[in-house]
Image (tube, rainbow, N blue to C red; front, side):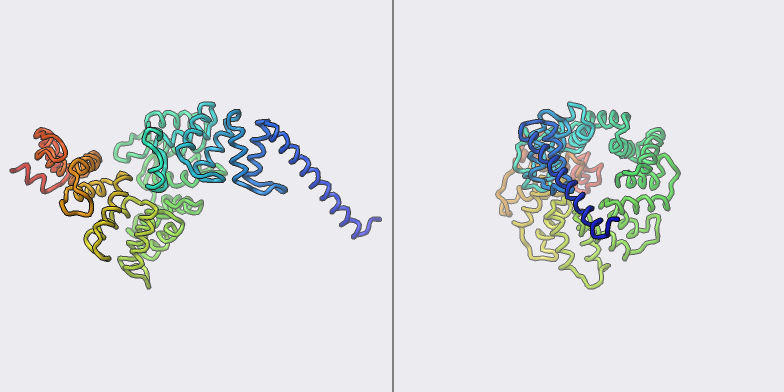
Amino acid sequence: MIGRKNVCLLLIGCAAVFCVRMAAAEDELREKALLGDPESEFALGNEYFYGTETRKANPVLAAHWFRKASDEIPEAMFNYGICLDRGLGVDRDPVAAAECYRKAAEEKCQPAEFNYAMVLLNGVEFRTVAERSKFKDSDIPARDPEKARKTIRSLADRGYLPAQVELAAILISNRDDVSAKEAEKAFELVSKAVKAPDAPARAWRVLGDCYFAGLGTPPDGVKMIEALEKAASKGSLEALSRMGYCYEFGINVKSDPKKAVAYYERAAKAGLPAAMLKYGDMIASGEVDGKGSDDAFVWYKKSAEADCPEALYRLGTLNLNGIGTEKDPELAAEFFSRGAQLEHPNSQYELGMLFLKKDGPIAKDDRAAFFWFNRAASQGCAAAQRQLAVCYENGTGCDIDLEKALVLYREAAKNGDVEARRRLNR
């Protein structure tokens, strides 16, 4: 009969043998990888990426082995793209990541097809203006929404879950002009997606949109809130922010400023720039006990530091006019410039106005002013449309063109600009 002590020793011995065998197998995998076997390089990269019982996770080594295997294995190319996209084990390079997705997508790697489609749909995602400035325009993949939607639809038809969710979001993206057939398709897709064990948070959020607007299903405020809460529980910061909005304005729930603050605060502290701005607004409006305008300004700055375009514009306006802070036109110009580069139309307009000033915080430059008015006007900014018309009327930064001026005055007046209406009457 084996005693308890001997049983323990036997178990320890078995465990030791198991670990030795595991280590030997891993050493064999490493040896094959060092000899240049792509499958072993890819497998070794995965082990370093996720970690195993005997091999610690190491993003630097994971990125190294994915890169080594990437020429032969599309999934390794995709994984290396993920490392570049997230800055895992390598310096973050979203442009190089997009190229990895493109190459792996050509080999029909579905996750890569999807990620590259999202690049074509939304553009390369830069975290800051400074990061964007490292790349030439010619190096950055151009957006191609039509091609993106075609790829997403194809992936959805092939049963790829993230693509099915994204297709649903695309179908209902223009709520004012969505057909009954498209709405039903979107609702069908996300209703099916949320039943999957690995249902992404975005599926629940899009389902909430369907219930909110009555797309493919009768409007249902209770189910909308349930869907958003589920998305929030799965880590969707956007869902947290939307829940805050619902409680702030009483959308399908009883208005509750304290709950609104709680949701905004959670999303803000988790790093959502738009929620940082909104949390600052709630503080500024006196909804957060023990916090005042200085605390609100801190959150505005955090949001701006994360390159939230609206926060950059807000801080530019506050610094330009000395509201809540000392007047600082130079700092205002910096904020407007950063917002303008992120395609925020009001920031572009304000930057253009600063370029027109003779004694402003930046050197007078009529051509630069015209450039930014044109960018903002193309996005429907009425004030910029009117100011661009003034440029064409007077030849400021461009050749005089009264016909273009008239068209722009009309467009600005149509969009509610009072000064444009006055000039038209003139």
